[in-house]
Image (tube, rainbow, N blue to C red):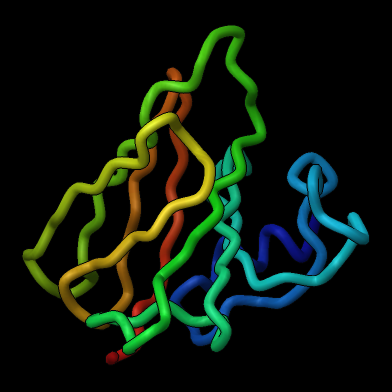
Length: 138
């Protein structure tokens, strides 16, 4: 769990750590303990797995490279997920944007309007978490 806590704290310190996902987030990965770039939510309720070939997100997006994030929730609701709502705030600026992932945590493409460290407040199906993601200049 120490790696997951470290991942939550350094989402903006550079490239996200490349390590094994928490056990609860490994479903569908082969081998299950494969190392992937990811950032863990501060409360441990969600993990953002980055699927970029450079293991980084960019603003604006690079040509022919999407800002793909797989959101994995620790909590599985009894019914269908509600949309994952993202309120993103650029650190050091007065810029806030909202994004939504239909169907709740899962695969997404999240583009944000500027490079920098973004603080994300996440909510879905009655759950909440927070993490930071760095978007490098595109």
